[in-house]
Amino acid sequence: MYDKAVVVLGCGVDAKGNLSEDAINSVRLGVEALEDSSTCLIMSGDVSYKATFKPSISEAQAMKDYVVSLGIGINRVFVETESKDSLGNLFFTKQNLLIPLGITSLSIVRGPNQSSKRIDYLATKILGGKYNFKIIEPPVERPAEQEREQKSLKLAKEWLDSIPNGDMGAIYDLMRRKHPGYNSSLSLESLK
Image (cartoon, rainbow, N blue to C red; front, side, top):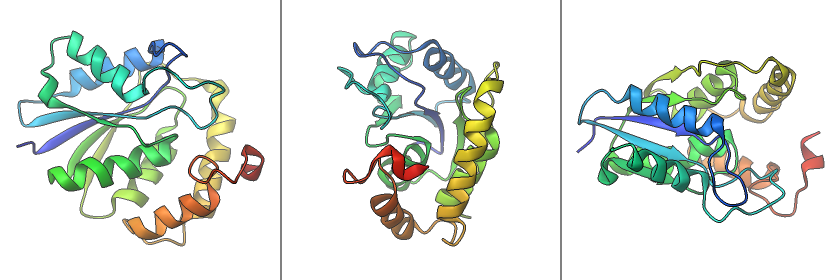
């Protein structure tokens, strides 16, 4: 049914489920990247594991609602609502949507608070060699996020470098053991 996907990574919602300006801009970039009717949109994200509130709606569902309001057919938009960070966005998108839909070619819309270097590393590690992807850059950069992104990339490499690209079982096992977003017995302090 679909040969390609545009994956929009979650960029935030407030407690009422309203999209952040970054998320609105990411959705618009995703819509602009649609090539033809063989390309679907995938909105990815529940809410950040660092959030201090539980919104009334997931990031992915809020993005889907917005994109449908722009005139994109509801059957062309899929949601992934298990992820709580960029690692989870890509992992659960592959597991829950790309594999079942048979899609191996995708564009990834990253938010301005995510570095292309980190998203490229995570996508390469999670997707493996059977997938072709490109990253769509937002028109705005957040220099203040660079230090955090460098730390996040360093941690991702510490965790994932020894895992073969595309090894979903090993990546999921790591997420369940080490990541506070996917192991409720861990705290944010475990990432420091």
